[in-house]
Image (tube, rainbow, N blue to C red; front, top):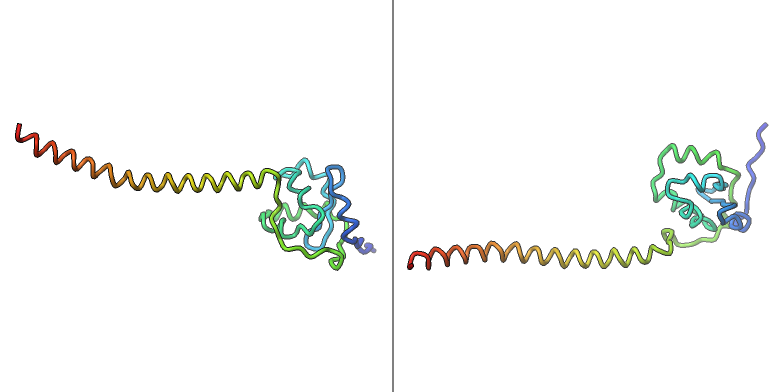
Length: 144
């Protein structure tokens, strides 16, 4: 007869938040992903950033494949008492470089918009300039 899965409280799971000991809470289940840290396609930092919280939304937002979801089962160690998990508004995991990347993306977007405006102006002016030069050559070329 199979034993009931262990029921963890949030504070106990939250202690497992580093490279040598990493537990995640996803969909009410607790996973010890420590052996998977080096193999995770997104890198170990992504998993470490998902500790000390309910990582369900982080996991679902990425859109993991069915095989990834099935592979999780080998890391399952029990369930979480959801009444002990703090309620937090969802915010995507952020790394130190995320704010730098966001700022760079904003600057790039502004730069691209400026470049786009310049290109549109040039697309109008260059043909107009060609027409003026052609007219000038046609008109003054016949006089000489």
